[in-house]
Length: 185
Image (cartoon, rainbow, N blue to C red; front, side):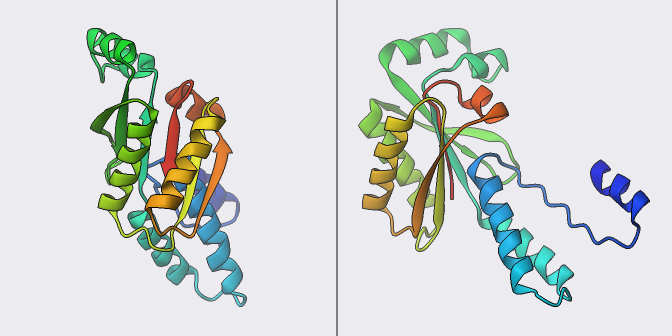
């Protein structure tokens, strides 16, 4: 909002739509792509309010789920007790979580082993919304092999339009930590 205010100080005639994605990684990419698509379709530039409304509707339908192998950041942020994190890591248990509509993180499952983790992720995706024809982005942190296997699992289990794999950068890398996978759809 501060950026909007600063821009309007310099150019008060500008129309600026601010949307809280309440997520990260793939959801942000999908939202930006949708904004570009809507703006290109509005060649005369008369549908600003309609574009903003469509973007907000689209954002509300987007989902994020993810899995972690390293729990250090959850422990440091007070979201997980150190003993629990050590135990999960030692047993090879992966946390499977979602981003809620409010932008919070909610652990919804734990899976032992990579194959069960991939199935848990596609199950969460199926339960969260109709995935028919949706675009999926998988962000991975130093885990291309895991992302490729997850892509194959998603394509087997769900009627999605496409699955794209992207390497995490910046803040996403910090939160996903090594081997983390973030799915936006």
